[in-house]
Length: 550
Image (cartoon, rainbow, N blue to C red; front, top):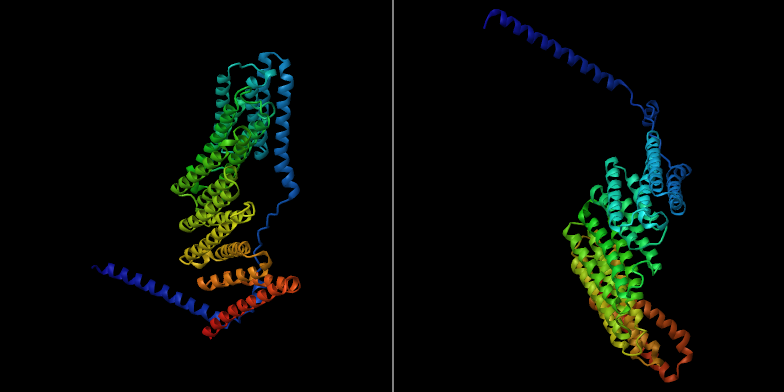
């Protein structure tokens, strides 16, 4: 290495040493200053440093919300309805070309006004723009359906034009990525179709609008638009159902019923498919709302129609809907939907079948059918881990328990069957929950046990009352209480013993208030002796258990 290079290296090392020395001196000075500075109290430190300004909390101004959100929507609904009535009642006085041109010109002007307003007030302008799209749809609808305005005679051509109109609404709203435009246009399109008589053509156009709304559910996961469409579609069918001559007038009742059920089935399938395409990407609340509203719409409207036009087939209708809900549960599970949605399908399936039982069974057979359905639902809920299904099963068992007063005879067997059913559901639900972490079950298990043991207590009480003479009712209550204690000790479950204590309290009250003075001497002696023996026996068991613990 040359001498010059060695000198340069020494200069670099010297400068580095000087830099490190200065840094050490600076650090030592800072540490000395920190040790000599007195520590300030926490309060004075906070006072010395002014707190950062907190962001102002946005508080919703109710008046502003009503004025901007709701008044704009109410206003566009009123405006479109007013224009629709104008077309219905006065456009017939115009020539053919004039009524067509005036209708579309009116809708185009309203849509253009909405686009202009959206430059400054986007939401308000889009509401007006959506109203213009809805008005264009109604003009197309009226050109065939409204007799005073009719220009298009071919129903097929009218349906094609309406389909193109719906496609246009969907494409425009999708391009704008505006749920407001889609909701206003489709909602008003659905409701303007109800301004005149509802016929087969109306239901077809309604189905197309529903399909457009469901596109947004599948494509964008928008919820409000298809939910409002679901309500509007079934509402349209309700209006048609109230006007019995609207569809297929003069045709046999069986054909009218088949036509009505076909539309209801189409609605149900459309909304179910849209829901189950991507169930994991929807919120639980939205999924449940869709599933439950769709089920209620099909079940209530279909049951009313079948009861009116084909009552002998009512039970078959309920059974079919129950199978459809069961199939929905299977598809939801296959598509990876939330357990809550799967349980909702299962619970409504069982509930539908139970609701249809009175149309096929009566008296003793009805109680037996309800008992069987409730027991199977409760056991299936245990196997599948579906808490909603278990709850529905217990509710059906309670309905069966209340219906035991309908049969004139043979109640003892029904009470015994219900006692066994309540006990099995309670025991197996406990066995299931013991394999789960405590937070998973918790209060749900306690509530289920309470209802099951209470139902078992009522069933046993009424069973003993059915077997005992009426003169020994109080003694029968004591026997029922003793039975609940025995069952509670046998399965080591205190809820049965609590029910036994409740029955025992009522027994003692009746004994002192009624039997002490009302019973004949022999029955009074028998009641008091046997009841005293049972009370002492139960108390002795409690004493032994307490002694074993100590």
